[in-house]
Image 1: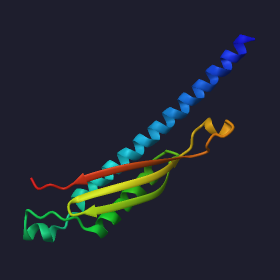
Image 2 (image 1 turned 135 degrees about the vertical axis):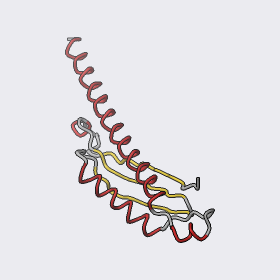
Image 3 (image 1 turned 30 degrees about the vertical axis):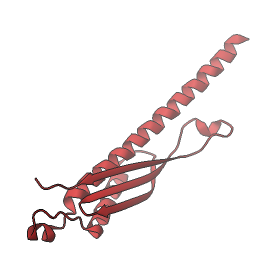
Length: 134
């Protein structure tokens, strides 16, 4: 009588471990994407006209930053084999700093089978980069 209860508990713990690991990996993937996008945009979207007028002035072009981030996200979605779905991307530019906020939904494997379990989890990742003159 005790063995079936122990097996049930072990199966439940294994399901929690699998879901936790999958959601952790999905969050790390989104964090890497946000950090990488912010870093790429901080260098590629510099306003070169302002820089050449005064090499101490680093300004990031808002419109170009948004467009580059959109391209990076689209390329990632095309190349990625993940089931994580990006639901929202926000790009904020303040002088020489770019902040990229990505919201995504990840699907746990076992949680939907449990009464009250969620069918998708929202993940938020924030990446920020500042351009600096060398």
